Length: 162
Image 1 (cartoon, rainbow, N blue to C red):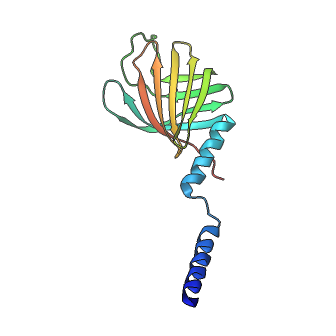
Image 2 (cartoon, helix red, strand yellow):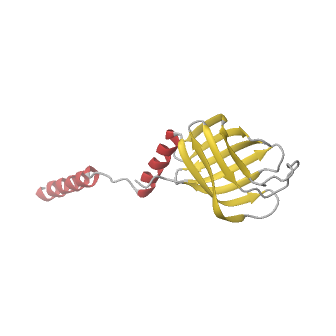
Image 3 (cartoon, rainbow, N blue to C red):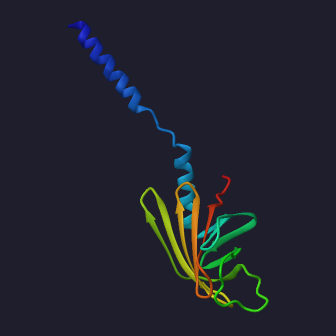
């Protein structure tokens, strides 16, 4: 009888000790919190390292290309590969714009990703951005245009060091 009581008490102490410890957040949880903080602040930058045009294969990018959101403005500097239905004479070929956004919207899918959408009007075209941002910081950016084929980019969210 004393042995059963002793074993039961020992098991209860071990269970209390195991569940009573403070759980430290994992690296993934910390990164997810940083991603959420960046998106909620409305000031973040997405660095692009791959382009996937509708015609042709994936292209790894070696230069610095990005989409930066700052309040109600966007700063976009992206290359373009694909078919242009209408292109201005002497155009630079990429997607470059620094302007106010229209219809900016962020939807959060619990524990998985953010869905960000907005459109902007540049001098030669109107662009619609559909960004999927996962909680680990990786991103997929789909850009549709009026005068060009759609193109997709892959990249990552730049996170603060601290």
